[in-house]
Structures are given as C-alpha cells and as structure tokens.
Length: 429
Image (cartoon, rainbow, N blue to C red):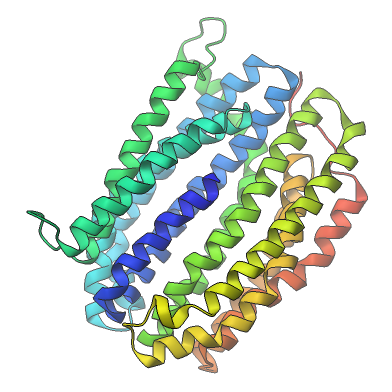
C-alpha cells in the first residue's frame, strides 16, 4: 500500500502536467530521469540498511540496530548532498545535450532546480521508513504517505494551473508541490522516530564515535545489496535519457506510460521487499527450517498480485484515449503501440523480483548483483542505445527491450534460489 501511494504521486504529476502539452511532458520526463539517478541511489542504500536491520531485529540485537540506524543515516545524508551538488554544478550542460529541443531543456532545468529540496526530504524519509519496516512498524510510513498524497495533489494542482491567488507556475509548480509534500512527510516520520526511540543508543557512546565505528561493517554488507539497485537505477535512467532522443511525441508517450508501469512493478516489488524483511528476520532468529514454506507461499501470492497488475494494464491500455484525449494523435498512437508489451511484462518480472529480494535478504546479494548488472549492461542498455541512436526504431521496439530483459535474467535468478546458498545470516545475535 505504501508503494502504491508513493507511485501515485508520480502519476498525479503526469496527469496535472499533461494539459500543458508534449513539451512540458518531455521536460518532466527528462528531469525525472536525471533526478532518478540520485534518488535511486538513496533508495538503494536504504534498502541495504533495511535488510541488515531486519536481520538485527530478528536476532534481537540492539547494538546491530543502533549501528544500522547511525551508519545508514550518515550514508543517506552524504548521498543527498552529492545529488544536490551534481545538479547545481553539472546539470545545465547535461540537460541541454540530452534534450530534443531548447524549450524542453529550459523547462527541465527549471523543474530540477525547484526539485532539489526533495533530495534532502527523501534522504530522511527513506531512512526512517526502512528502519520502521525492518522493525515491524510499517503502518506509520503508510499514515505519513496518506497525509502526503493529498497535500502533493492539492499543492501541485494549485501551483501548476493557478488556483485562487496562487500564480500558474506550469511545470515548476509540480516540483514545488512535491517538495512541500515530502517536507511534510519527513517531519511526520521524524516525529514517529522520536516517539519510538529508533536511534537505540548503546552503552552511552557518543553518536559521532558510534557512527564511525559502525560505518565500515555497514558499508561492507551494504555495497553488494545496494549495488544491485544502483546498477538498476543507472541502467534504467541511461535508457530513459536515450529515450529523449526519440522525438517529442514518442518520448512524451513513454513519460506518460512509465509511471503506470512503475506503479505496477512497485506493487510487486513492495511485496517482495516485505518478503525479504521477513526472510531476514527468520535468518536472524536462526529459523532456517521455516524459510522454504514461507517463501513458497509468498511467491504464490506475488504471482496473484502480478495477475492483478496485468488486468490493470489491460484496463489502462483501453483507457488511453479517454485519459489523454487532449494530446496529439501521434502521442496517443505511440501509447497504443505499447499496450501488448505491457501485458507480457508482469508475470516474469514478478517471479524475478521475488527471487532477487530473497537472495539479497540472505547471503547471495553478490549473485543478485551479477545477474542484474550483467543483464542490464551486457544486454538491455546496449540494445536500447542501438535501437534508439543507431537504428532509429519506433518506441514499441525500444520498450520491448524492457520486456526481454526479464526473460534473459529469469534462468540465473531461479537457479540461485534453487541452490539454497542464500540461507545465511548477516549479523550475530
């Protein structure tokens, strides 16, 4: 439910920006592609913290939980600062190089500059959220998201189109609305953290000294776990930036469809991450005998979720003309060409996602990284660049690479699960 709410924000933004036309949509797609590189890295290291903290919770180790809290927060702060610096120092030349037109570049840069506070907000939000997830308190982030979603929708709508005394700011209004909403969620989650005492002070040690002591071990465990997500984020966003060369109409079609695709994928991914948390807790308790039955049940439910996502994609593909009736015919036609590919995606992606999260929760994070990175950088990225930059194929051919990616990595993922080598503890109880 948290994942659906978070992805709904992106969908709301695209619906609000769609009436501004293809140029604004393409600009938002380009800006989100660049911002996604930084935000994806934050999510990657936060996910690593989550799995380490889950095993610490299962083992009942307050010391390990304290180390996960302090080290994970320090990493997130450094990453957020780096993201802001990259946009400020190197954003303009990169955006102008990637944008199909100068008008798209100008709007994308304006969006990115107003989006910068989101980096700081997400660094805090994501860290507190994963600690709450890992310790079995997933309702609190859900309540925070329930507050954030209507605030984001209302603030963005008011600032994009101008409601009452507020000016119509266009695309940057969506960025400001997101910054306001993320700031509110960060405040709510910090209040929850304070209430639950999630810092777990240990033996009265000074916070700075404790953080320095915890960082090396945390980084050693986190790098292979986070590396999988960093690789996926980089590969995805390199492809998105290549999509910008397709032309305004086709890139606008992808900008519209990708949040819907990601929403469906996030629903499955969230279930898989929750499965990984519980696998980590079982491993932390030394309850390996329960793992096979638990993972089997979780996989079957995930496949049911994947089927529901497929049905939702079918309904979406039949609604393109209604949802985006104000767009050019070429953009709507490009959207329609993607419909068959949407239906081929959910089942294989669902099974692969369960495999990846279970492998990372135990001792096979390095194997998961090899499968993901190998497929992405040896197949998906080069084929996408070939299709877009060399062969100049249509958007349907380019998006088909995303579907093929899941089939390529299915065999090594399922072999890794069958081996059982992932049933290993990351922390000492």
